[in-house]
Every structure is written in structure tokens, then in C-alpha cells.
Image 1 (tube, protein in one colour):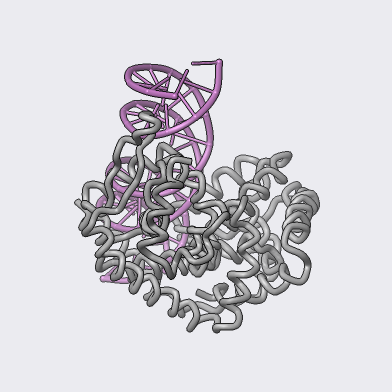
Image 2 (image 1 turned 135 degrees about the vertical axis):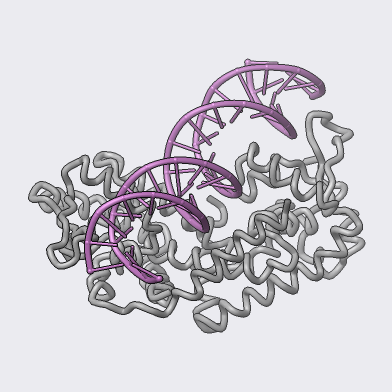
Amino acid sequence: MAGKALNVRQKKVDRARAESADDRDDLAFHIEGLRDHAGYAIRRAQVWIFQDFIKTLAPVDLTPAQYSVLMVTDACPGQTQMAIAKRLGIERSRMVHLLDSLEARKLLRRTVSPTDRRSHALHLTTSGRAAMAQFKALAGAHERKLVEKIGARDHAQLLRILSAFHSE
Amino acid sequence: MAGKALNVRQKKVDRARAESADDRDDLAFHIEGLRDHAGYAIRRAQVWIFQDFIKTLAPVDLTPAQYSVLMVTDACPGQTQMAIAKRLGIERSRMVHLLDSLEARKLLRRTVSPTDRRSHALHLTTSGRAAMAQFKALAGAHERKLVEKIGARDHAQLLRILSAFHSE
DNA sequence: TATTGTTATACTCTATAACTATA
DNA sequence: TATAGTTATAGAGTATAACAATA
């Protein structure tokens, strides 16, 4: 690579940083400055996980966001758009389009709340509830691929550590 | 110019903070179906971490992506755009705009490589190198806030677990 | 022919503001 | 007045494709 000579010169200038950079790949080693930043690591992880989720659920054409709305609606029917949007950290204007797509596919429907006619209560349709079995199976297959990649023990650790962010 | 983007980002952060600790209704329990999905957990974590990074580095108006490019260029000067983009998982067309912004601020400069005149070698400017001390200090302050939130032990565990994604 | 950097387009997601219909 | 849902717009980020200069 073109940067090798320059890198050697840099080692002389900054001996402390270059001490163990001998025959390892330049960039691979020098990314070390970012290795202590969880933000960088978590971005790489999210890219991998979301890409695998989308790929695994391609047969049913569901994104992570769509799946999360279906899961919460299935588990807790009758909630309003706003309640679910807040809970999942989805903007309410974004939620409109998300629900439009799910309603167009007859997986979910909005009904005007009898107690507050401004609100829309959300319910899965009969076919939506039936489809959840396949959705969950595919999501489970995705999660198992992640377990395969990082190991069951670290997977459990990861979920435990990240649970600190659920209520933010 | 840069101040506008900064202001917008800051508003986002302030609003997120203001609404953070409000609603613990029955949805909190029913989110359980997503509890076993690392993708959901990791998205929530990334939102928190990136918002805190942006807020903490607001005085110098640097995004996580800009910071990562500066860090790698500082540690390993003379690399080409493509080499750094590949390493950081940034699209090469996106990298063009990132470098435009950093070059406009005189933090970094592109020079035509003498060995391959298609390539641009990247170096920090003198003022860019000098500014890195403050950037690193602020990024360190951000990371300490994360350590405060999840604990030093889990922070170390998190970095170790997520390192599995660095080479993907 | 292949690659580097660049430009352009389309699409997704986020943030914001305005509008309506209710409350 | 305030809130739920909707619509519209602007800003980032991502994914592609095409192009010129160079290898």
C-alpha cells in the first residue's frame, strides 16, 4: 500500500503509539483509537444485524420497524398509535407511513377509539395474527444466526447489558 | 452553514432528554416479545449513544462519522480515501462529502498520490492535528458518560462482545 | 478492463411545522 | 388550549449507476 512508507515515518514520530505496529495490517491496527468507543462498535454491529434481519425476513418483506410494531400490537392490542410510537421510539409522522403499509397488507387495522375519537386503536387482523407465527419463526432464525456468530453466552450478556437502554 | 446543522441536532437531543423519563405504562411489560431481539436493543442503545456523542461534541460540531475519519487519518496518515472508507464501512460516494466538510474546515487535506495519480492521500493539517486533542478529550468525556450509565465492567464486556463485528 | 474519485438519482429515516378534528 | 393523527418539506444516510482520469 502507498501508506506504508508514511506509516514507518509516523512510527518514528510517535514511538509510543507505534510500538507494536510492526507487521500487522496498517489500518487494522490503527483503528485501535476507535476500539475504545462503543459508538463505533455498536454501529458496525447494528449494520450486520439489520442487514441479516432484512435478508432473513425477505420472504415476508418485513423491516425491523414493521416487525416491532406488529409484535407490540399483537402482545398488547387496542393501544393507540401514539402510545406504541412513543414506546418504540418511532416519530408519530413516521408511524403513519409504517401503519399505512401494514394496513394495506391487511395485517393490522386502525379503528377510531370510542372513548377519544381523535385516537386510533390498533389491532392485528385475523390474517395478521395468523401470519405472526411465520414472522416470529423467521425472526427467530435471524436471532439464531446472531447467536451463532457471537456465541450463546455473549448473546445473553449483550441483551442484559443493552437492557439498560430500554427505558430511555 | 455548520451552525445550522448543529442547532438542529442540539434541539433533537434536548427534546429526547426532556421526554426520556416520563411514561412507564402497561406497554413496558408487553415489549417483552422484543426483549429477546438484540436488533431492537442495539437500536435503542445506538440512538442514546449517538445523541450523547453529538451533544457532547457540539462545541466542535463533529459527528461520529467525521470523528472516525479524523481518528484513522491521524493515526495512519497518507492512506487513500478508498482504504479508509472500506475500513470504516463508509460508502465511497458518502466519503466524498464527509471529506469535503472536513477539508472546508481546514482539518484535513487531500493530496494526489505520487505513486497512483487516481488516488488521494489523506493527511490532517497542522491545525487539524492540534485540534485532535480537544476532539479526543470530548469523545473521552462522552465515553465516560456511557461508562457511568452501564458500569465499567459491562462497558468492557460490551466492547469485547461487539469486537466480533469489526472485521465484517 | 478495472479502479479512484466524483456526480447524480432514488429511497429510507429523522426532525419539524402546519393543518384537521377532536378534547 | 392542547392532543392525535395526518401531510409536507428539508436534512442526513444508504444504495446505485454512470462518468473521467488513470492504471
